[in-house]
Image (cartoon, rainbow over all chains, first blue to last red; front, side, top):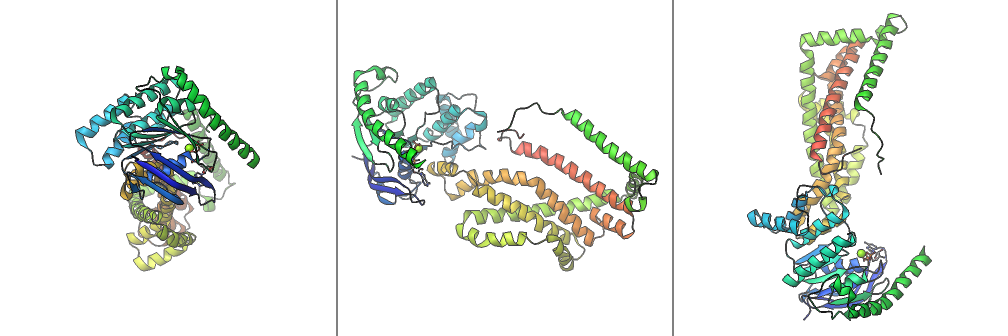
Length: 261
Length: 260
Ligand SMILES: Nc1ncnc2c1ncn2[C@@H]1O[C@H](COP(=O)(O)OP(=O)(O)OP(=O)(O)O)[C@@H](O)[C@H]1O
Ligand SMILES: [Mg+2]
């Protein structure tokens, strides 16, 4: 069973730069997959292709067995960059996806209120994004993405801007939520620990042009305690294996950046 | 980044400005009285005051201001409306944009003052010759502001709402137009200014009333006090309009961090 499949996907931008080369990746439904790799290896590009925002130069992307054309249905995308509408309040930002789907009235109101509460922003409903901290804006974006309950979640370093405590809280909340609704998640992160703590499977990508270098099954039992799981001996073992893979790529990526610069 | 320095005290600034104006007017007045400045060419503040007082008694001022404001407002609404619609159209369609924007740039380079006599020829001494003169100025200011606003929108915002399920029109409504509105509002002050210029210049060329007409009429009589009086009324008008627009902008752009 696969819900998302990339077969021989290559992406060359108009500038001539090839960000992805021959990427093959199958994701089973309801899996939590973490995507790690050095900066610039094409992680964001991969998510963009899956969401249908961008097209591959060659290769095939299918979601639920259908080739991606136009925007993929039932996808939530948490962008790496700030994507809240600055002219809408927190409440209106979270309401927007429901509005676009024709959900209105009492149901919309209660779902919006629920999600604003779940990301810990009660009392900030009438604030505008510029009045919030970077971490708060990320949390609004999270509520905005989850409020319409998409089946597939694409998350691009969603917690990178958060302080450690909030981050742990949000990670735990994400896991609870995922266990409750069994979404398929592709979670991009720089942070190997975060990847292992959250995911069923970690995909390590090579320095750009990105390819899949290795995949690891994370067999740690669930439900996991985000903080305790890091002390599990299997965690440490996985970590050192993956770090070996990743380190080579990161060094490679630095060496290239230095050579270019 | 903006520096957080102590802002200058508003009232102190205002007091200094008033003092500066008073000093300039006094120097002018005494220059005339001392025979250093020829009042035939340069008038004098007291004479300008007398002239304006006379106009007021005749009921000219309110009528002139009313006529000019009416033309300005129509020019603003019509020019602004056309500018916005055109910008939305040309910015949202690659082909239309590529074909028509260069023409707009071209038209915008025509010195519009030279067209005013044509408008008067076409529309007579009516309201419309003034409105059209204003429109051909306002249209471009608003068009380019809106067009740039739409073109400049952060692509991440568009991507975000598209993934959430926005269709073309939704993107327009929730992202492109609000983003362009910021630019439109910031162009509003210059748009009003241009509308007023268009109207006044057209009045100057041919009208039966209006501040521009009053200035032209005085000029024909070699009445320098009347010319300065008209300009003074114009200045006061612009000042009041700007004050009002500043308030309006602050209310409409609540979602923006306060301007420096
Ligand atoms: N629109 C574009 N045009 C040209 N090159 C691009 C474009 N978008 C991305 N790239 C390039 O493609 C490569 C991959 O970019 P991408 O954003 O996918 O990296 P990433 O893995 O998400 O990196 P990071 O971890 O820093 O976010 C980068 O080298 C980037 O410069
Ligand atoms: Mg990225």
